[in-house]
Length: 425
Image (cartoon, rainbow, N blue to C red; front, side, top):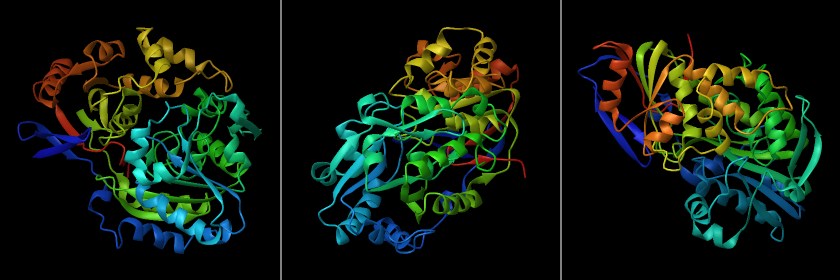
Protein backbone atom coordinates (compact mmCIF):
# COMPACT_ATOMS: atom_id res chain seq x y z
CA UNK A 1 0.00 0.00 0.00
CA UNK A 2 3.05 2.28 -0.15
CA UNK A 3 3.04 4.59 -3.18
CA UNK A 4 6.07 6.60 -4.30
CA UNK A 5 5.41 10.01 -5.85
CA UNK A 6 8.09 11.89 -7.87
CA UNK A 7 8.84 15.23 -6.23
CA UNK A 8 11.64 17.41 -7.59
CA UNK A 9 14.62 15.10 -7.95
CA UNK A 10 13.45 12.90 -5.07
CA UNK A 11 10.25 11.07 -4.08
CA UNK A 12 7.55 11.38 -1.43
CA UNK A 13 6.29 8.03 -0.14
CA UNK A 14 3.01 7.34 1.63
CA UNK A 15 1.41 4.22 3.12
CA UNK A 16 -2.29 4.13 2.21
CA UNK A 17 -3.14 1.07 4.29
CA UNK A 18 -5.22 3.23 6.64
CA UNK A 19 -7.26 4.82 3.86
CA UNK A 20 -10.16 3.73 1.65
CA UNK A 21 -7.69 3.38 -1.16
CA UNK A 22 -9.11 2.89 -4.66
CA UNK A 23 -5.73 2.17 -6.23
CA UNK A 24 -3.20 3.85 -8.51
CA UNK A 25 -3.46 5.08 -12.09
CA UNK A 26 -0.10 4.22 -13.64
CA UNK A 27 1.16 4.47 -17.18
CA UNK A 28 2.35 1.30 -18.87
CA UNK A 29 5.40 3.29 -19.94
CA UNK A 30 7.06 2.48 -16.65
CA UNK A 31 6.98 -1.28 -17.28
CA UNK A 32 7.86 -1.11 -20.96
CA UNK A 33 11.25 -2.63 -21.77
CA UNK A 34 12.80 -1.24 -24.98
CA UNK A 35 14.81 -3.43 -27.32
CA UNK A 36 17.50 -0.74 -27.48
CA UNK A 37 18.56 2.13 -25.26
CA UNK A 38 20.21 5.52 -25.48
CA UNK A 39 21.97 6.52 -28.67
CA UNK A 40 21.36 3.10 -30.25
CA UNK A 41 17.59 3.63 -29.93
CA UNK A 42 17.84 7.03 -31.63
CA UNK A 43 20.05 5.74 -34.44
CA UNK A 44 17.65 2.90 -35.19
CA UNK A 45 14.77 5.34 -35.54
CA UNK A 46 16.85 7.62 -37.76
CA UNK A 47 17.81 4.65 -39.93
CA UNK A 48 14.14 4.02 -40.68
CA UNK A 49 12.49 7.45 -40.91
CA UNK A 50 8.71 7.61 -41.26
CA UNK A 51 7.36 9.52 -44.27
CA UNK A 52 10.71 11.11 -45.01
CA UNK A 53 14.14 10.49 -46.55
CA UNK A 54 17.03 9.94 -44.16
CA UNK A 55 18.48 13.01 -42.49
CA UNK A 56 21.75 12.60 -44.41
CA UNK A 57 19.87 12.89 -47.68
CA UNK A 58 18.00 15.98 -46.51
CA UNK A 59 21.18 17.62 -45.20
CA UNK A 60 23.28 17.06 -48.31
CA UNK A 61 24.42 20.40 -49.72
CA UNK A 62 22.66 22.48 -47.05
CA UNK A 63 24.59 25.43 -45.60
CA UNK A 64 22.41 26.75 -42.77
CA UNK A 65 20.80 24.07 -40.64
CA UNK A 66 18.73 24.77 -37.54
CA UNK A 67 17.75 22.13 -34.99
CA UNK A 68 14.93 23.28 -32.72
CA UNK A 69 15.61 21.83 -29.26
CA UNK A 70 13.46 21.83 -26.14
CA UNK A 71 14.12 24.13 -23.20
CA UNK A 72 14.76 23.66 -19.49
CA UNK A 73 11.11 22.90 -18.67
CA UNK A 74 11.04 19.69 -20.70
CA UNK A 75 12.73 16.42 -19.65
CA UNK A 76 13.87 15.62 -23.19
CA UNK A 77 17.04 13.44 -23.14
CA UNK A 78 18.83 15.74 -25.59
CA UNK A 79 22.20 14.24 -24.66
CA UNK A 80 21.28 11.10 -26.60
CA UNK A 81 19.23 12.74 -29.39
CA UNK A 82 21.38 15.63 -30.58
CA UNK A 83 24.73 13.81 -31.09
CA UNK A 84 23.35 11.30 -33.65
CA UNK A 85 21.62 14.16 -35.48
CA UNK A 86 24.83 16.20 -35.62
CA UNK A 87 26.80 13.14 -36.69
CA UNK A 88 24.51 12.34 -39.60
CA UNK A 89 24.39 15.95 -40.78
CA UNK A 90 28.16 16.34 -40.72
CA UNK A 91 28.70 13.03 -42.50
CA UNK A 92 27.41 14.71 -45.67
CA UNK A 93 27.72 18.45 -44.94
CA UNK A 94 30.79 18.92 -42.71
CA UNK A 95 30.94 22.65 -43.41
CA UNK A 96 27.31 23.38 -42.65
CA UNK A 97 26.57 26.06 -40.06
CA UNK A 98 24.41 24.30 -37.46
CA UNK A 99 22.43 26.18 -34.83
CA UNK A 100 20.62 24.68 -31.86
CA UNK A 101 17.61 26.94 -31.38
CA UNK A 102 16.12 26.56 -27.90
CA UNK A 103 12.32 26.46 -28.07
CA UNK A 104 11.35 28.46 -25.01
CA UNK A 105 7.92 29.42 -26.33
CA UNK A 106 6.85 32.08 -23.84
CA UNK A 107 8.97 30.67 -21.00
CA UNK A 108 11.88 32.47 -19.39
CA UNK A 109 15.38 32.34 -20.87
CA UNK A 110 17.21 29.04 -20.41
CA UNK A 111 20.33 29.46 -18.26
CA UNK A 112 23.74 28.13 -19.21
CA UNK A 113 23.80 25.61 -16.38
CA UNK A 114 20.44 24.29 -17.57
CA UNK A 115 21.84 23.94 -21.09
CA UNK A 116 24.78 21.99 -19.71
CA UNK A 117 22.48 19.69 -17.77
CA UNK A 118 20.43 19.15 -20.91
CA UNK A 119 23.12 18.73 -23.58
CA UNK A 120 26.35 18.16 -21.67
CA UNK A 121 29.33 20.48 -21.38
CA UNK A 122 30.89 19.39 -24.67
CA UNK A 123 27.94 20.34 -26.85
CA UNK A 124 27.35 23.62 -25.00
CA UNK A 125 31.02 24.56 -25.42
CA UNK A 126 31.31 23.45 -29.05
CA UNK A 127 28.00 24.14 -30.76
CA UNK A 128 26.24 27.38 -31.62
CA UNK A 129 23.22 27.67 -29.31
CA UNK A 130 20.61 30.45 -29.53
CA UNK A 131 17.77 30.82 -27.05
CA UNK A 132 14.48 31.92 -28.65
CA UNK A 133 12.86 35.10 -27.34
CA UNK A 134 9.17 35.40 -28.20
CA UNK A 135 9.26 39.18 -27.65
CA UNK A 136 12.34 39.99 -29.75
CA UNK A 137 10.67 41.64 -32.76
CA UNK A 138 13.97 42.13 -34.57
CA UNK A 139 14.46 38.37 -34.81
CA UNK A 140 10.89 37.41 -35.74
CA UNK A 141 9.33 37.18 -39.18
CA UNK A 142 5.72 36.73 -40.28
CA UNK A 143 5.15 33.69 -42.49
CA UNK A 144 1.37 33.37 -42.70
CA UNK A 145 -2.04 33.47 -41.04
CA UNK A 146 -3.05 30.66 -38.69
CA UNK A 147 -6.39 28.86 -39.16
CA UNK A 148 -7.43 30.62 -35.96
CA UNK A 149 -6.93 33.95 -37.71
CA UNK A 150 -3.82 34.96 -35.79
CA UNK A 151 -0.63 36.11 -37.49
CA UNK A 152 2.09 33.46 -37.54
CA UNK A 153 5.46 34.93 -36.58
CA UNK A 154 8.46 32.68 -35.99
CA UNK A 155 12.14 33.04 -35.13
CA UNK A 156 14.11 34.42 -38.08
CA UNK A 157 16.80 31.75 -37.72
CA UNK A 158 14.19 29.04 -38.28
CA UNK A 159 12.71 30.89 -41.24
CA UNK A 160 16.07 31.51 -42.93
CA UNK A 161 17.40 27.97 -42.44
CA UNK A 162 18.12 25.86 -45.52
CA UNK A 163 16.97 22.91 -43.44
CA UNK A 164 14.80 23.07 -40.32
CA UNK A 165 14.82 20.12 -37.93
CA UNK A 166 13.56 19.46 -34.42
CA UNK A 167 14.08 17.15 -31.49
CA UNK A 168 11.60 16.62 -28.71
CA UNK A 169 9.49 14.19 -26.76
CA UNK A 170 5.90 13.00 -26.92
CA UNK A 171 3.72 12.90 -23.83
CA UNK A 172 0.02 13.43 -23.16
CA UNK A 173 -0.76 17.15 -23.33
CA UNK A 174 -3.67 18.69 -21.51
CA UNK A 175 -5.01 20.81 -24.38
CA UNK A 176 -2.88 20.08 -27.46
CA UNK A 177 -3.60 16.35 -27.19
CA UNK A 178 0.05 15.36 -27.25
CA UNK A 179 3.34 17.23 -26.97
CA UNK A 180 6.11 16.87 -29.52
CA UNK A 181 6.21 17.14 -33.29
CA UNK A 182 4.62 20.35 -34.48
CA UNK A 183 4.84 22.02 -31.06
CA UNK A 184 8.53 22.70 -31.69
CA UNK A 185 7.44 25.57 -33.95
CA UNK A 186 4.23 26.74 -32.27
CA UNK A 187 4.63 27.63 -29.48
CA UNK A 188 8.34 26.64 -29.43
CA UNK A 189 9.89 29.32 -31.65
CA UNK A 190 6.87 31.51 -32.34
CA UNK A 191 6.12 35.09 -31.36
CA UNK A 192 4.09 35.74 -28.25
CA UNK A 193 1.20 37.13 -30.34
CA UNK A 194 1.01 33.89 -32.34
CA UNK A 195 0.98 31.79 -29.17
CA UNK A 196 -1.76 33.96 -27.69
CA UNK A 197 -3.97 33.55 -30.77
CA UNK A 198 -3.51 29.78 -30.71
CA UNK A 199 -4.21 29.56 -26.97
CA UNK A 200 -7.43 31.61 -27.10
CA UNK A 201 -10.25 30.93 -24.62
CA UNK A 202 -12.52 29.56 -27.36
CA UNK A 203 -10.01 26.85 -28.25
CA UNK A 204 -9.07 26.02 -24.65
CA UNK A 205 -12.76 25.56 -23.85
CA UNK A 206 -13.30 23.36 -26.92
CA UNK A 207 -14.39 19.81 -26.05
CA UNK A 208 -11.71 18.37 -28.37
CA UNK A 209 -8.87 20.38 -26.78
CA UNK A 210 -8.14 17.65 -24.26
CA UNK A 211 -5.49 15.10 -23.36
CA UNK A 212 -4.91 12.48 -26.06
CA UNK A 213 -7.09 14.12 -28.75
CA UNK A 214 -5.69 15.37 -32.07
CA UNK A 215 -8.56 14.95 -34.53
CA UNK A 216 -10.85 17.96 -34.39
CA UNK A 217 -8.60 19.73 -31.88
CA UNK A 218 -8.37 23.41 -32.96
CA UNK A 219 -5.18 23.97 -30.98
CA UNK A 220 -3.45 21.09 -32.78
CA UNK A 221 -4.73 22.31 -36.16
CA UNK A 222 -3.00 25.67 -35.71
CA UNK A 223 0.21 24.01 -34.52
CA UNK A 224 0.41 21.62 -37.46
CA UNK A 225 -0.23 24.47 -39.89
CA UNK A 226 2.61 26.44 -38.30
CA UNK A 227 5.08 23.56 -38.54
CA UNK A 228 4.34 23.05 -42.22
CA UNK A 229 4.42 26.77 -42.97
CA UNK A 230 7.85 26.95 -41.30
CA UNK A 231 8.97 24.00 -43.47
CA UNK A 232 9.92 21.82 -40.53
CA UNK A 233 11.41 19.00 -42.57
CA UNK A 234 12.35 16.31 -40.07
CA UNK A 235 11.93 15.46 -36.41
CA UNK A 236 13.42 13.07 -33.90
CA UNK A 237 11.01 12.54 -31.02
CA UNK A 238 11.17 10.14 -28.10
CA UNK A 239 8.85 8.71 -25.49
CA UNK A 240 10.33 8.59 -21.98
CA UNK A 241 9.70 6.60 -18.81
CA UNK A 242 9.56 7.82 -15.20
CA UNK A 243 13.37 7.87 -15.07
CA UNK A 244 13.32 10.30 -18.03
CA UNK A 245 14.98 7.65 -20.20
CA UNK A 246 14.06 7.27 -23.86
CA UNK A 247 12.21 3.99 -24.41
CA UNK A 248 10.85 4.61 -27.90
CA UNK A 249 11.86 6.88 -30.75
CA UNK A 250 10.48 8.05 -34.07
CA UNK A 251 12.16 10.04 -36.81
CA UNK A 252 10.98 11.56 -40.06
CA UNK A 253 8.05 13.68 -41.25
CA UNK A 254 6.67 16.14 -38.68
CA UNK A 255 3.13 14.79 -39.03
CA UNK A 256 3.56 11.11 -39.90
CA UNK A 257 6.37 10.35 -37.45
CA UNK A 258 4.60 12.26 -34.70
CA UNK A 259 1.37 10.32 -35.25
CA UNK A 260 3.30 7.05 -35.01
CA UNK A 261 4.77 8.15 -31.69
CA UNK A 262 1.35 9.23 -30.41
CA UNK A 263 -0.13 5.85 -31.35
CA UNK A 264 2.59 4.04 -29.40
CA UNK A 265 2.07 6.29 -26.40
CA UNK A 266 -1.70 5.89 -26.43
CA UNK A 267 -1.45 2.13 -26.10
CA UNK A 268 0.53 2.46 -22.89
CA UNK A 269 -0.82 5.65 -21.29
CA UNK A 270 -4.58 5.23 -21.42
CA UNK A 271 -6.06 4.34 -18.03
CA UNK A 272 -9.65 4.10 -16.83
CA UNK A 273 -10.80 6.44 -14.04
CA UNK A 274 -10.90 5.29 -10.43
CA UNK A 275 -13.38 7.85 -9.07
CA UNK A 276 -12.57 9.07 -5.57
CA UNK A 277 -13.24 11.89 -3.12
CA UNK A 278 -9.51 12.64 -2.94
CA UNK A 279 -7.02 12.26 -5.80
CA UNK A 280 -3.29 12.71 -5.26
CA UNK A 281 -1.22 13.57 -8.31
CA UNK A 282 2.17 14.98 -9.40
CA UNK A 283 3.86 16.58 -12.37
CA UNK A 284 6.32 13.70 -12.66
CA UNK A 285 9.02 15.42 -10.64
CA UNK A 286 11.88 17.49 -12.08
CA UNK A 287 11.93 19.39 -14.41
CA UNK A 288 8.17 19.70 -14.87
CA UNK A 289 7.37 20.46 -11.22
CA UNK A 290 9.53 23.55 -10.84
CA UNK A 291 6.57 25.94 -10.67
CA UNK A 292 2.82 26.15 -10.13
CA UNK A 293 2.19 27.13 -13.74
CA UNK A 294 3.46 23.79 -15.08
CA UNK A 295 1.78 21.85 -12.25
CA UNK A 296 -1.64 22.57 -13.74
CA UNK A 297 -0.87 19.80 -16.25
CA UNK A 298 -0.67 17.11 -13.59
CA UNK A 299 -3.86 18.42 -12.01
CA UNK A 300 -5.85 17.73 -15.18
CA UNK A 301 -5.24 13.99 -14.76
CA UNK A 302 -6.77 14.21 -11.29
CA UNK A 303 -9.61 16.36 -12.62
CA UNK A 304 -10.64 13.45 -14.87
CA UNK A 305 -11.16 11.04 -11.93
CA UNK A 306 -11.95 13.13 -8.83
CA UNK A 307 -15.57 13.23 -7.69
CA UNK A 308 -17.45 16.50 -8.23
CA UNK A 309 -16.85 18.63 -5.14
CA UNK A 310 -13.86 16.51 -4.14
CA UNK A 311 -10.26 17.37 -3.34
CA UNK A 312 -7.11 17.21 -5.47
CA UNK A 313 -3.78 16.99 -3.66
CA UNK A 314 -1.02 18.24 -5.95
CA UNK A 315 2.61 17.40 -5.16
CA UNK A 316 5.02 19.75 -6.95
CA UNK A 317 8.25 21.13 -5.49
CA UNK A 318 7.69 24.55 -7.18
CA UNK A 319 11.10 25.93 -6.27
CA UNK A 320 10.61 28.58 -9.00
CA UNK A 321 7.38 29.83 -7.41
CA UNK A 322 4.35 30.62 -9.53
CA UNK A 323 6.14 30.36 -12.89
CA UNK A 324 4.24 33.15 -14.65
CA UNK A 325 3.60 36.71 -13.52
CA UNK A 326 0.35 37.10 -15.45
CA UNK A 327 -0.80 33.64 -14.36
CA UNK A 328 -0.25 34.68 -10.77
CA UNK A 329 -2.00 38.06 -11.11
CA UNK A 330 -5.02 36.61 -12.91
CA UNK A 331 -5.59 34.30 -9.94
CA UNK A 332 -4.48 36.49 -7.04
CA UNK A 333 -6.24 39.71 -8.05
CA UNK A 334 -9.81 38.35 -8.11
CA UNK A 335 -11.36 36.22 -5.33
CA UNK A 336 -14.32 35.20 -7.53
CA UNK A 337 -13.04 32.48 -9.89
CA UNK A 338 -16.34 32.37 -11.79
CA UNK A 339 -16.00 36.06 -12.62
CA UNK A 340 -12.46 35.56 -13.93
CA UNK A 341 -13.59 32.62 -16.07
CA UNK A 342 -16.38 34.67 -17.65
CA UNK A 343 -13.91 37.47 -18.41
CA UNK A 344 -11.74 35.01 -20.32
CA UNK A 345 -14.61 33.42 -22.22
CA UNK A 346 -15.79 36.82 -23.48
CA UNK A 347 -12.43 37.52 -25.14
CA UNK A 348 -12.01 36.93 -28.87
CA UNK A 349 -9.27 34.87 -30.52
CA UNK A 350 -6.95 37.84 -30.91
CA UNK A 351 -7.69 39.29 -27.47
CA UNK A 352 -5.92 36.58 -25.45
CA UNK A 353 -3.56 37.83 -22.78
CA UNK A 354 -0.40 36.03 -21.60
CA UNK A 355 -0.97 32.94 -19.44
CA UNK A 356 -4.76 33.18 -19.82
CA UNK A 357 -4.99 29.59 -21.09
CA UNK A 358 -3.24 28.13 -18.08
CA UNK A 359 -5.39 30.15 -15.71
CA UNK A 360 -8.53 29.14 -17.61
CA UNK A 361 -7.75 25.43 -17.28
CA UNK A 362 -6.81 25.87 -13.61
CA UNK A 363 -10.10 27.67 -12.95
CA UNK A 364 -11.96 24.82 -14.63
CA UNK A 365 -10.25 22.43 -12.22
CA UNK A 366 -11.05 24.65 -9.22
CA UNK A 367 -14.71 24.74 -10.24
CA UNK A 368 -14.76 20.95 -9.91
CA UNK A 369 -12.59 20.37 -6.83
CA UNK A 370 -10.62 22.09 -4.09
CA UNK A 371 -6.84 21.86 -4.42
CA UNK A 372 -4.34 21.23 -1.64
CA UNK A 373 -0.79 22.03 -2.74
CA UNK A 374 2.30 20.32 -1.28
CA UNK A 375 5.41 22.26 -2.32
CA UNK A 376 8.29 24.49 -1.27
CA UNK A 377 6.46 27.61 -2.42
CA UNK A 378 5.42 30.13 0.28
CA UNK A 379 2.09 29.35 1.97
CA UNK A 380 0.87 32.89 1.25
CA UNK A 381 1.47 32.41 -2.48
CA UNK A 382 -0.47 29.15 -2.50
CA UNK A 383 -3.43 30.77 -0.74
CA UNK A 384 -3.38 33.77 -3.08
CA UNK A 385 -3.75 31.30 -5.96
CA UNK A 386 -6.94 29.77 -4.49
CA UNK A 387 -5.29 26.66 -3.03
CA UNK A 388 -4.56 25.36 0.44
CA UNK A 389 -0.91 24.72 1.37
CA UNK A 390 0.34 21.58 3.13
CA UNK A 391 3.81 20.43 4.06
CA UNK A 392 3.42 16.72 3.24
CA UNK A 393 0.94 14.07 2.10
CA UNK A 394 -0.19 13.20 5.62
CA UNK A 395 -1.09 16.78 6.47
CA UNK A 396 -2.77 17.20 3.07
CA UNK A 397 -4.98 14.17 3.65
CA UNK A 398 -5.95 15.45 7.10
CA UNK A 399 -6.95 18.80 5.59
CA UNK A 400 -8.87 17.05 2.79
CA UNK A 401 -10.92 15.10 5.33
CA UNK A 402 -11.82 18.34 7.10
CA UNK A 403 -12.80 19.98 3.81
CA UNK A 404 -15.03 17.05 2.86
CA UNK A 405 -16.43 16.50 6.33
CA UNK A 406 -15.52 12.82 6.06
CA UNK A 407 -13.24 10.70 8.23
CA UNK A 408 -12.86 8.01 5.58
CA UNK A 409 -13.02 9.50 2.07
CA UNK A 410 -12.05 7.37 -0.90
CA UNK A 411 -8.54 8.04 -2.25
CA UNK A 412 -6.94 7.45 -5.67
CA UNK A 413 -3.25 8.02 -6.41
CA UNK A 414 -1.68 9.12 -9.71
CA UNK A 415 2.09 8.92 -9.20
CA UNK A 416 2.85 10.67 -12.51
CA UNK A 417 0.02 12.90 -13.65
CA UNK A 418 1.65 13.96 -16.92
CA UNK A 419 2.27 10.36 -18.04
CA UNK A 420 -1.32 9.13 -18.08
CA UNK A 421 -4.43 9.79 -20.14
CA UNK A 422 -7.45 9.21 -17.92
CA UNK A 423 -10.34 8.29 -20.23
CA UNK A 424 -13.55 6.32 -19.90
CA UNK A 425 -13.35 2.89 -21.52
